[in-house]
Structures are given as structure tokens and as C-alpha cells.
Amino acid sequence: RGGAGGGGGGGGGFDFGEVMVHQMIHTIEYVLGCISNTASYLRLWALSLAHAQLSEVFWEKTVIGIGVEGGDPLMLFICSFAWACFTVGVLMGMESLSAFLHALRLHWVEFMNKFFDGTGYKFAPFSFETMNDEVIE
Image 1: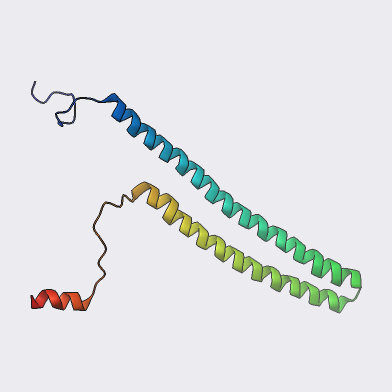
Image 2: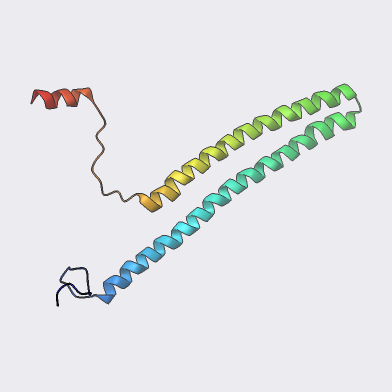
């Protein structure tokens, strides 16, 4: 029959059961990947909500609770400054954590799911000692 159509050249017959199992494994991996990506994004969203809530709590406890209710303009200024410092500190800390988690998620969840097979060779770091050993032999 020459080279017209049919098969991958393996010579074996078509096994529907093997193809079905293979496709089911890929389907399960895809669904788990979707759930994992969704959970990862929900984690980032929860971090941003936590920042907003903490900022509101700081506002109520410092500026409203001490500054406004105290009636002293100097205390209001000091409480507003303390609120700004606390909020910026929390903002920087939590947003740095958010950026780190997002980069980690992109690397481990998305990149590793799409491109990494783990079928390569064992990593051997560069070393002058092994290089000298090879030259001597």
C-alpha cells in the first residue's frame, strides 16, 4: 500500500482501550490544572482583600477612634500620619508577597504544567575541579 495514510508506522494494531485510558489521563490532568490555576488566582485575590480590610481597620482604630473622637487637631494629624505609615507598610509587605506568589505561581503552576516533562538528564553544576579532572584524564 505504499505510504498512503493509516497509522504512525509502528506496525501494531489500533487499541481503543489504550487510547481511551491515555485520553482520560490527559482529561484528568487538564481538569486538575484548571482547578489549581483557579485556586492560585483566588489566593492572590484573597491577599488583596486582606490588605483592603486591614487598611480599613487601621483607619477606624487610629484616625477615627483616637484622632477624630479625641477632638485635638494635633492628635488627628499624628493619627493620620501613623495610619499612613501602617497602611504603606502593610501595602508594601503584602503587595511584595503578592508579587512573589504570582511569579511563583506562573513558574510552577503554568510553566511547569505546559512545558516541563522531566525526561532530561541529571543536572551537573559547573565546576573547575571536574573540568580539570577531565583534562588530566
